[in-house]
Image 1 (spheres, rainbow, N blue to C red):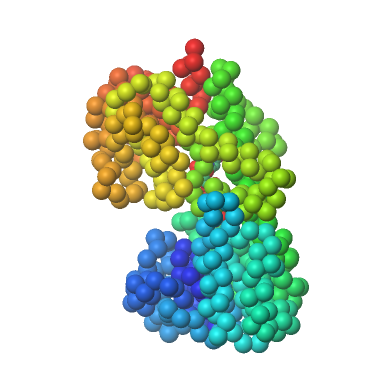
Image 2: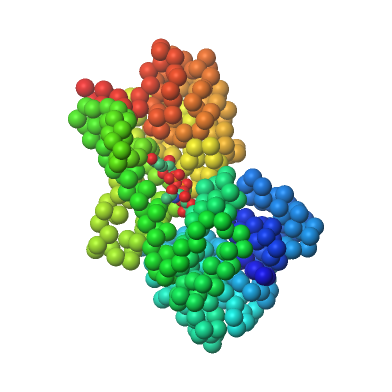
Length: 410
Ligand code: SAJ
């Protein structure tokens, strides 16, 4: 089977790599000329275990090539970004539409087209399908169209692409069958056949489920701060119930999935998606809440911010709530940022960040913060750990977290 994968990013490249390892020929298409040149020379631009070796081997075996242009193939897989439109939170399909249009000259009867990018419910039926119909194809008869969202954890992408169950949402049942034949080349998890709109909403709801649950945990943290209860103990104890799984409060929700996908649903049904919107608002309110308590701990001086990634042990700071917290504080305080996973000329080393600091503000659960070098920190400097990552601080340090910030109101 020959496959053309449009978009050679975090999902497209590993997907392309796995097809080549399973006896398929792959053309990986991207608009970025440098990425294409590098890939054709075996230089991989994403940091993900295993990919580089597979791509090098596939280049040697002549089963992979990167290109600025699509080619004729049996199946086309679209893995391009879908940002959200800031004014109305709806899903920006422009890259997906451009990608669909770019393959039109190469499409032949009997081909399968799969959109993997996360898209708002109804996008396949209302917007993507007409692109191919206008070009003369009859979906389900001579062209097979499906939405098959990815679900992977960075750092484990290869493993999860192979083993995770996969939603296959065809525009017609024939489309689902054809798309499942494509993924059957390497997926060992279950291929769950459904309609495109169900697949779209399932993907958005997976991330919405987490966002809503995190909002509940964040609301609990606020309630506990107000009424004087240890929120972290409440969560630990409630979670001993076999059917309860309270999530963890934090400084807000970042990343390119949880902080965005719920809006795709909200934008489709704004009068009805009340819990979803309120959860987004609650999570978006956390930076302000963190700053309110920072001000209760220290009125002025230097704050050492530890960690600005949206997620622990990654260098990914997309939509990170840390940046809103910093911009809310920087007028009143001197801010020194340390993040061992992000290279930024404005950031400083740990020792420089904590030296003479009036507050250490932990905004990310990188492993490095579990065991910090406390000898570099003055025992007079309070620590506010918004991710509950610090477990073994020496007794002489005052550590605030969502378990005890209510003390600041007493
Ligand atoms: N967070 C909390 N409290 C928690 C859990 C997370 O505040 O209890 C915060 C994190 O600090 C982070 C944000 O939420 O800022 C998102 O982190 P995450 O690890 O929950 O999610 P993502 O965005 O990295 O990855 C999600 C995953 N989806 C689900 O778990 C349902 C992943 O499986 C998907 O592949 C990915 O979105 C995606 O591509 O959609």
